[in-house]
Length: 319
Ligand SMILES: [Zn+2]
Ligand SMILES: [Zn+2]
Image: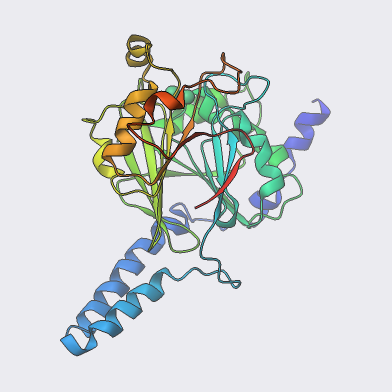
């Protein structure tokens, strides 16, 4: 056995301390408790005079649990291209370090290591095309020496066996996954600070999900690997979102290719952002073949949507 395989087979802090028999993970387990508490509070304070108490009590449910009272979190763009990395961009990966949340596990996943600041990691996969999941195999190094109590990969139920049987097949990667799986359902997942992450079905070859995170006063949506169209069903689900992260693989003029591959051209993405009344739009999953500073002509859609920017690797924004 080679040294690296032997090293990988050492139990990690995560696998040693992972609670046994907790197949649901804490996120979904919290939901019924939260719903029950909210219902009880609602029943208790139904008189008009006590409505303020009710509002305050519900607000308390969402109060961030951070001792320093953080009311906003940072979003790190760790991989902003699709298909394959290039000299400037890794493939799909975003991280909210304060929440221990990673969105997609493309090649940008190796950058998660330096940003870990929680003892849990929740990795949400939009789908399992390789540019969104290959980074799961980097986790032995990403987590090396880190004291994690839990690492969970949240993904559609139908995508779990492709990861286990193919990505982790012995000839491809000869060790077991060092994380647990949690199938995504139509119920939102409650994150560490009380915010909720919901899944949004997207049209894409093989199927994909978008994600929307809602805090009491702000929201974020991540929509990648789909063909933008104002009439698409997902637009309703992202309506009113503050920060919209949307894929834009192609410039205008490539509509046929976009339709064929399940990706987006610039103008329809801007139209979607406008229809959803997003406050700002950041473009990701841009074509890796174009390594220029301006792979998309944002000026051409200024009349459609103004607050638009192409995200770059290692960019950090407040959300
Ligand atoms: Zn992709
Ligand atoms: Zn894809």
